[in-house]
Length: 313
Ligand SMILES: C[S@@+](CC[C@H](N)C(=O)[O-])C[C@H]1O[C@@H](n2cnc3c(N)ncnc32)[C@H](O)[C@@H]1O
Image (cartoon, rainbow, N blue to C red):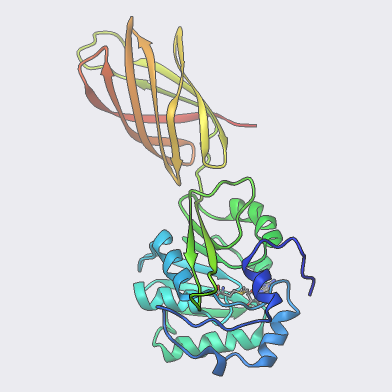
């Protein structure tokens, strides 16, 4: 296995010290040393990513970000001894699927799932993560190597549905800024501080393009007012402008979390500067939500439905 000297922390540190078996702090205290034999470890060493189990504190932080429920489906890429999928099944009743190329580890994970009484929820398969279909996931977890995590980014964006939560142990997705991150203490000895970093993303809906809608102002005898918005998007970051002929203004306080979009614009409508606060859910080429109007008009909240007229190039 190639061990790049540029690896930031976690896996590299552990590899230098030799593959070590970390105890589980809170999610299922099982003696892994009895289950993961040296042969299984060696087999894992020859893969793209070695087997280094996530510490119990890391699992707790991952679940804190992802908030699994019984309605979720969790996929762990490179599931090792199955602790993430089994932990979510036991603690939250979440269905899950773990893939790993190491047959020995898949067997260990299946046996643990049986023993912990969650075999009907937690499934494991010998499978290459690159050949795994991510579409069914609502939560995707991974503890891989930095190059692999970044290489996976296009596949994640192409296959995962908007709103899916991604949690990565130690490695980030490059230019795709995390929505949140957290340092987790995994020190086994007080004189040897050690941390892992947990990164969290929510897959954003496609918001970019030209959007059109009309708002029917109550107590206004005129026809509905026609709006246009031009939105540019870089992952979950959006910016753009709003126009109500002949006025135009920049949108601000814009946010996109999964399918939920929100932005504000102050723009002249019928010779009054009106504050517009839009909040809605993107479903394909349609947004459904509300707009709160204030400023030049009596504050009022109205329904808002927008249609994408043109997708971004
Ligand atoms: C660092 S361990 C993480 C184990 C577990 N997800 C956890 O956090 O405790 C990475 C795992 O990825 C597996 N692996 C490496 N390359 C793989 C590939 N191409 N497809 C599937 N699994 C792979 C290894 O066998 C190893 O078990």
